[in-house]
Length: 494
Image 1 (cartoon, rainbow, N blue to C red):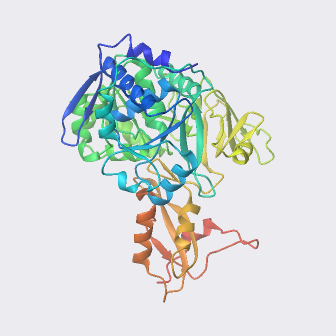
Image 2 (cartoon, rainbow, N blue to C red; image 1 turned 180 degrees about the vertical axis):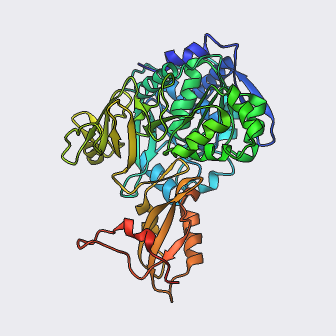
Image 3 (cartoon, rainbow, N blue to C red; image 1 turned 90 degrees about the vertical axis):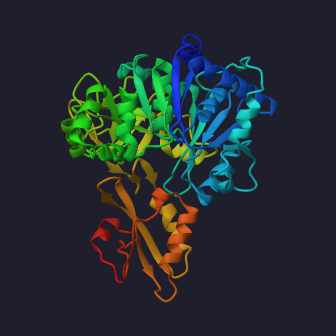
């Protein structure tokens, strides 16, 4: 199952219909039809072909939400390219690893972000690329593709701190979107307010593809800003909104009369990318009169499980397996456990990626007899509802972004005066969790301000420790393993 015939239901048969409006930093709204998107992506595909790109080549983008991301995505699907989205919050260490690992032909970025890209990498300015593409023929270029054709290489953090690239195919994306459009009854009559970043599978695989498959209308915003949310909802009057828990927590701050008006028009609010607290689920229902639909997915698998659209949306759970997904819960011996028993969640289906880019050992470790080991710990109720209870690893999820402590720890340990360092996630009312660093230091050599500055220059903002707690010793087992559960009770020595 390739994507282009599914896109064409909108790009070709709905060519004259309004498809998209983009809001600029100054508030200017620019509208586009589906036919405009077809023409723009055709011209860009012509230019990319002229620049030598061919099927299987990687092309990265390092961009905020903007129409050019959609152009690149469509042009990539038409040419059989492998598009590599890069989180715009990433900095030197993360960017260097990704561009060296994926080895893209170029990174498409904007003038304000270009200086962050490693010097040895080819950079294409997005504005110049768009201007040059506008002079190209509008004739479609399309290479033969199928369900196994890779479309994207999306990086997800690994437990060792080094990101792994999940190879997602056209079939993965097609299966995912077809299932969601059907399960959530998304039609051309819907209006989707898109604030999720398009470098993340939540905004890309769910939001962007559900829009293209259904032919609904979309307003694309650069990012979510809670101070502007009330005005956005009032102006655009969306029926669909996909967000992360931190967004829904911010939306609880709106006045009750404003929230009720929004909720009356909001047919479906979907939360994902991090656990949604049950109390937020209930407060949102009371304030908006709308029940959030929580679901569960991963970069490697797209969507796995979701609360039903036409059924009970049970707070604290991620719901039931989606139509295309098989799920089982296994113990440490890889044996399925009875319902009601905690274990690791395993999934299987056409949504699961084909493996990790150039990581055969990591791929072999994550797949067992066709099943993908998610690393998530959960329990299935007798009626099939699944509740997640945490990670096998030490993953911290902050505002929908995954943080693996070891990456931060390794960088802290490079700083003068640091003898030991470990990072844990502590509860936060808005972001769910935030990283906190516990350090054993030589006080005469350790400069906290310099360490903070170093981390800010090297890592994304969401990975910055909220605080640095100095302790006399980090608790460990007899075998030397850090006992992170004991850290939260320790107090600083300084």
